[in-house]
Every structure is written in structure tokens, then in C-alpha cells.
Length: 466
Ligand code: AMP
Ligand code: ZN
Image (cartoon, rainbow, N blue to C red; front, side, top):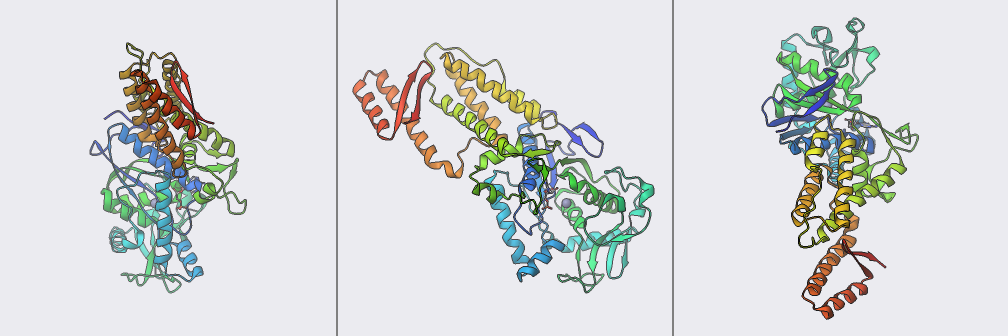
């Protein structure tokens, strides 16, 4: 296990990660509300948690990740009703598309994806515990959290406590910091269209309680990491702390980690501006999945990500440069006696940047410096066989985090061609080595037949399409 530092919103500083039960790290990510297709802003946040997960793995930790699926709230209920569909089948569709999207962006699957509506019993139990502690009260068929009863309320978002003692209540799941209210735990009353029986009558859970109940069920009363977009710090995460620590009297989460938002061409994404792109929208524009993955990963998570089409082009060529480099290494035959090796230790440098609060830009800087250095060694045919093998291994280790080297779905015919060409080049080199020039020429003709021309350079044989 390598030391790992991360910015903790609770402490307002970078801290060394000290998991409760190393090397295992318990990590909870606030997942999607499944009423529509997720947009690239959502994916920025989910790719940040993917980067965190994969960086922890690269640093030798084990990750137990839970991501909830919010399948009951005002939006899901209203949309399902507007479509005339039962809530469950309506949200099923969007859960399915969410999984398809994260798979295609190569976001590693979490260990658990609990759905709120599958945990109604746990949620009711949790609210009863809060009642027992005097932290929940009933009013007009609904149950509310009494924030005045929890002395630490506001510690995550550093609220001025004087401004929050007004005892006013709020039924909606989200609200402004300026109007802090007792928030709803259980929404009851006949106005609810979707309901479950409960000790307080039929109703449904509030949004905040779902994350407290499900994170504690899968990760325990105290766990290591909780993350999400910056907009969730208040009120959602503040309320989760109040619920969880109020119920158990124990510290809930050790490290709160928040990702900044994504902007499109410097503007907030919104339906009315027509810039709220889903993954499908981007694919329809001809964007490759690996390009999107790269562009969403390559800005530091605590900076706003300004998504532009220029940045997409730059990302596409960065991915191409890495794939070219891998192909060139694979096709490189070290001459006998070559002893050259890069001075840089790619994996150590890349890992230590990521272990410093996910410093992705310097990590990528190290990678491209390394590519330049090894390319120079191949240009001069001085890269040794052992160094070539290590370079391929190291590139794979780095790609266990980036995951952009595998061909994209739409790429497969090209990739197939590339594989075939590389194999033919190898056969031709072997034929020439054994001085079977007729065979070597036949292979060259075969390649020309598929539109491939060869160029023999001191660095080995390169190829391109005519
Ligand atoms: P939602 O489906 O609205 O519950 O959001 C799922 C996740 O996406 C949450 O962690 C949000 O904070 C995050 N999110 C929403 N909008 C954006 C945005 N524009 N940029 C980055 N993350 C966002
Ligand atoms: Zn949550």
C-alpha cells in the first residue's frame, strides 16, 4: 500500500488516507436519480469516482464501493405518471441505460448498486431509531428531522448555526443554504401517489434518508469515503451526517470528497440552452467513447471542467498518440546488443501523482514525457528487448487507470486490420532474417493488396494505408 492523500471537504484540507481496515477502503458514491438518461455532467462525477477507485487499486488498496440508485423521488414519480407507467418499470428502463452508459465509458462496476425502493424496511427502521433519540417528529402525516437536536448540524458546509434555529420545515428534497429547515424523512399523507405502509401511515422515504440507510447497511456505521458532485455537499450530505451520526452517536464518514461541476463552452448545462448532452448525443456527434472518457478524466476533479469541442479534438489525438505508441512498441524488434532503457520509472511517477489528491495533469505529463523518451530510444534502435517488455507492462499498468488503449466499439475493423498487419510484418521480418526474400516479397504484395504500404526505417518497419 502506498501513501495516498486526498482533499477532505470536512477538514478543508488534503489529508492522508487512513482506512479503518486497511487495505480495504469502504467507499459510497451518490448515484443517479433514474428518471432520464444521465448527462455528461453526471458522467464527469462518475468518472471522478472511477478515477479515485482505480487510483486506489493502483496504490495497492482494495475497494468496496457502493453506489445507490435513487428510484423514488418527486422527479421519478412525476415522470412515470406523465408516461402512464408504473414507477418500477419506468425506473428499470433508466437503470438499464445507466449501466449501458457506464459500461461503454468503462467506468468500473461498483460492488453494490442498492435501489432505494428495495430498502424501504431499512429506511423505516432508521427513522424509528431517530424517533427514539428524539431527533424525528411527526407533523401532518410526515416525519421530519429536528436539526436543532443535532449539535454538529452544519459542520460539513460550515453553516452559521445562528441562522438555522427557526424550526421551519421543508418537504422537498433540496433547498438553498440560506433557508435551512427541518427536512423530511418520510413523506406521508394522501397527496403521495406512490406509497408504502409504515408506522406513520402510508408514505414514501425522503431522499436524504435513503443514502444513510443504504450506506450503513453495506459499509457499516462508520466507513472511509463518501463522494459525489459538489452540489450534494449541502443539503444532502449535511443531512446524511445529521441522520447517521444522530442515530449511532459515531462518526459516519471519514473523508468527504466532492467533484466540481462540468460546464459546456463555459456555460452551465441546461435543457433550455440545449447543451445538456447525454452519452447518446455525444456518440451521435461522432465522438468516440475513449475520447469522452479521456476528456472527462483529464481535468482535476476540484476544478470546474469546461467541456469544449476543441478539448475533445485534443483528447482524441492524445488517445491516438498512446495507441500508436503501444503499437510501435509491439512491433519493435530490438537489434542484438541494444541496451537502451528509459531513465524514468513511469509507473512510480504516475502513481505518486495520482496519490497526491488525484493530480491527473502532472500524471499525464509524466506519461507523455515517457512516451517521448521511449520513442527517441526506438528511433535510434537502442531500446533493449527487456526495456521494450517493461515499457509494454508499464503502459498496461497506467492504462489500468486510464483505460483508453482498448479499441472502441466502432474501431474494431481498423483494429482487426492493425493486428493482421502487425502479424504480417513480423512474418516478413522473419522471412528476411532467414534470407527467404521471395517469401518476404510475397508478404509485401499481400499487404499492398489490402492497401497497406510499408516503410523500412532504422526504427523498424512502419506501415500506413495508401
Ligand atoms: P443526479 O442524477 O441529479 O442525482 O446526479 C448524479 C450525480 O451527478 C451527482 O453526484 C451530482 O452532483 C452530479 N452532477 C449533476 N450535475 C452535474 C454537473 N453539471 N457536473 C458534474 N456533476 C454533476
Ligand atoms: Zn446520496
